[in-house]
Image 1 (cartoon, rainbow, N blue to C red):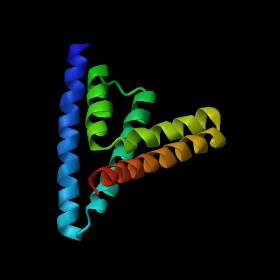
Image 2: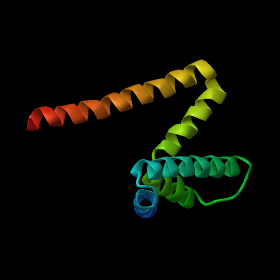
Image 3: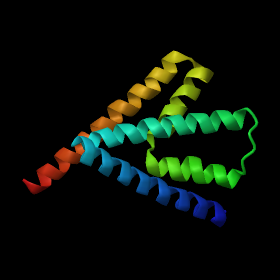
Length: 126
């Protein structure tokens, strides 16, 4: 169990550093940090989709390495990759309606939480 935690932590450190570097490069090259966020979200979705499908199709990869990549590296790079993957799996298993509700709920609650955090802190400091 502890070795699994270390694998996730190592992958997370790499993913977080990559996210920082991509965002910094996008901000420098394009003058827009949000481009880096989009880039890591799309890259993370591409990688988690490919990794998950390769695993389903029988590509052998040790469980600990999968944890390091899927939970650690991709989690550090972006949690959006997990969200995207779960939405697709939800749609395949339960249909479009429940998947759309899952996506909508995440977006509305997530963006709402960001607003609450922003306005809550503003209320404390103004």
